[in-house]
Image 1 (cartoon, rainbow, N blue to C red):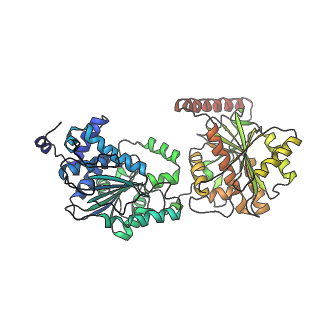
Image 2 (cartoon, rainbow, N blue to C red):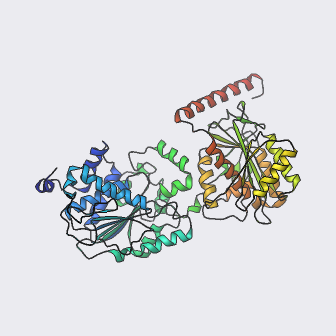
Image 3 (cartoon, rainbow, N blue to C red):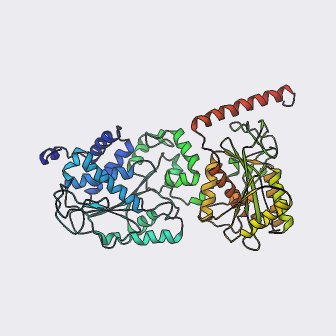
Length: 553
């Protein structure tokens, strides 16, 4: 353990301190972007301006570095009172727990650890540091943003990821967060240091950070996962990029479109975008300032359309080449979708389910979707609907379709007390001498966000394949009931924040895929790579066979 004189020799810069801690605990050195985060925090701790927003891409280690920053400034002034406010109580506790662990594990901070003096606070929600003047407020305290903060006082307030995916989903939730943050200024106590730092990643177009910057005059620094791709994209950040990024681009124009942090190469970033979905990636990794609606989550270009018979899937479709053989059909918003060559060998599907979305309002459709899951992909046999509701002939139609495609499990959304539908389906299936498992479920999450969160990553990774019947059904519905009732229209107009008047078909497709995701076994990266190689081999074999048969020019 170090003594007081030894500690004075170790009053390193924040960057040096963080690097030392990370090397000792993780065995790695900090990256360039982490170094710049340290620089901005240290500069702000001694700057005349007192309020700052640091918005950086997910995975950079903002919270970890800021925990070390808290202990770093306490080492210099033990009478500081620091309040940490997070989006949840759990995250707030984790922040302070890490600070406390630093005192116990890192020699540099060991003198801050209390030796059990009576009355000192040492819990994981709040603690005092050795040598601090005894006051009502602890040296470090953590509170969730929904907790009671009005009685807290501090010289430094760290607002760590106050905006989350959950609390920003609704307008009421976002308004609550914004109103709560207006109290923070009143919590600051008089002293040598007074400042508030917001650290976070946006989760909504109407982000808290936008309002704090525009309405309260905070300095706002943004660091995306890669440099803007061109001058136009650079301008879209409206001068809010961290200064060192502008300086780097001035010196080296080849940095446009390159990763900003050495831990993420271009291939890793691409995979992350596919896994997160384009809109979530744009907000959380690129921290784009413009309207989220400029990013269309679901596009026709991400869909493979081909032929496969009922009870089968196509294993060897050429995902890399995507050969176009038929006409190009324009979508509702001017996009196009294509039919692709049937190049694979048909395989019997492992698991096929049906999802039913009963009509809610009088003009809604009674909708159903049939989807198979295999090889880590989702094969959509049909998405259909009509206004025949609970009529017996309609229930017969739906059950016969289920039999045709080898369905064994039928999921029915029963948000409106549709247990009666399950009873009717059981009755009709008994008359037809068919056997199905009927499973009712309730959807509680915001529908628009649930649709995008479920479908977008699958679309972006090209893991969804439509049998051409899906297109014909969508066209029929469009002609019979109106374009807004069709799957294609609903797909192209799906947004996280915009409610469509009619969304039965896309909601039904979402339900089926969501249920399949929970039923399908998890495929390891190794097996996925092996399957990709098999797919390519199957495609080449199939193509050779076609050539031998003289069917391909």
